[in-house]
Length: 500
Image 1: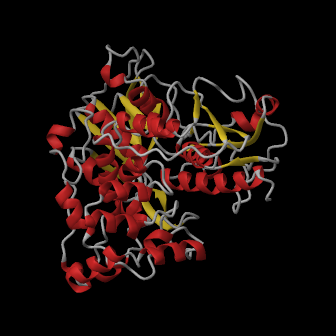
Image 2: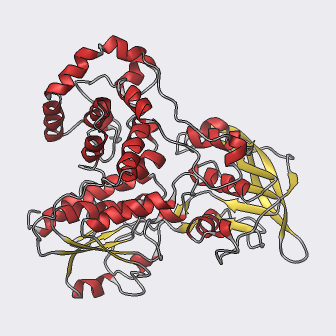
C-alpha cells in the first residue's frame, strides 16, 4: 500500500483528534466557517525573475511573508480524518502545525513539526508535497487546490532560524548503547536525530568531508542553500549526535571493526552514488559527465566559484542533459547558470511522462532551458583531442506501457540527427553504493545491488543491522528516505532495549 493511501495508526489518530479539542482551535473554526475557507485563494510562493536568477546560484523561491503564511493557513479545513498526515512519510501532525500558524504561533508550529521531523527547512524546499501530503488534501478534493503545506513548513522553519530561537529539547537519560549510522544523508540524519532523542549515543560516519549526503552534493544552492543544511545538521549535533566525516565505512573500518569498538546497532544509509550510463559510443570523451560527478563538483566542491575554489568544471557553450527527473533539471539549470548559451534537456519520453517535479520543470522552462522530447542519444562524437564536440540522437515515439506504467519509447527508423554540444550530463539514475555490501559478509543484497530488508522493520539479514533510503530503494525522494529513517530508528530502539 502506498504511503499516501495508508490508514493512520490508532495512536496517531487519537493524538490528532485530541489536538482538535484545544479551545483556540474551536475558536478558529468558529471565526472562519468552512465554506468561507474554501473560497480563500492559495498564496503563491514569491520567486525571483527568471532572467535574473538563471545567472547566479542564489535561491529561486523567496519564501512567504508572515501575513501570507497566516492567510494560507486559514485555508485548512480541520478535517476529521486528516489524510495529509497519512500522505506524509514521516507522519507530521500537519493540521496541528498549520493551526498554530493560523494563530500566529510560528515557533509553536515548528516545534510541532519537529516532533516527527528534524529537518523541516529542508523538507519544505525539496520534498514533493504535490504527490504526497498535498495530493490527498481534502481541500484539493473539494476545490482542486490544496493547502500549501510545504510552503508553510518552510516558512516556520526559516522563521525559527532567522530569529535565533531554535529549541533544543532537554537531553534524555543515557541508555548506555552506542549506535553507528553509516552515511549522513537524509535517512542517516533522521535515524541519528530520533535515536539521540531516545538517549542513545549516536555516531554518524560520513565518507565525504561535509555532512548531508545527496542534500549537499546533489541539490544545487539555488534550491537548497548550504547554510540552511548546515544549520539543520548543527541542530542534530546539539541533540548529542557525533559526526565523523572523511570516514569511509568499508575502507577506514568495516562493520565488524565498529562492533568491536562497542557499537550495538547499525544503520546503513550510504545512498545510491553509483552512476548509470547508457553504454553508447563516446561516453569516455572529455565533456561527458555523470550527473553525480557534475553536481558534486559544482555543489559540494563549489566549482561554480572557481578559481576561488580549487575544483574546476567544464563551462560549456552548448550543454545537453540526458534524462527527465529532478537530477536532470538540477543539472541543466546548473549548466545554464555556468554560462551555457544553449542548455537542453534530452528525454526519450514526452512531457507527460517526465518524473521531475512540476515546479522544477516550470522553473527550467522559465529560465530558458530547451526541451528536446521523444529524443535519445545514440553516440557522442569527439574531436582529435578526445573532447566532446557533437551528439547523435534518434527520434522516438511512444508505444505500449512498460513495467513502470509509462508508455515505452520506440525508435523511429531513419530519424538520426547530429547536434553540436560540448557538454553532456547523463542523469538517467544511479545504483546503490556497493562498498558496504562488498565488505560485510552475510549482508544480503538484491540483483541490482540494493541491500535487502524486511520492509516492515527495515532489518537486514544481519542482527542489529538496519538500512534505509537509496541503498534499499535505488534513487528515491528525500522524504521517503527520512520515512525509512523514522521506521528504522523505532525498530533499532526496540532492538537495543530487548523488545524484539
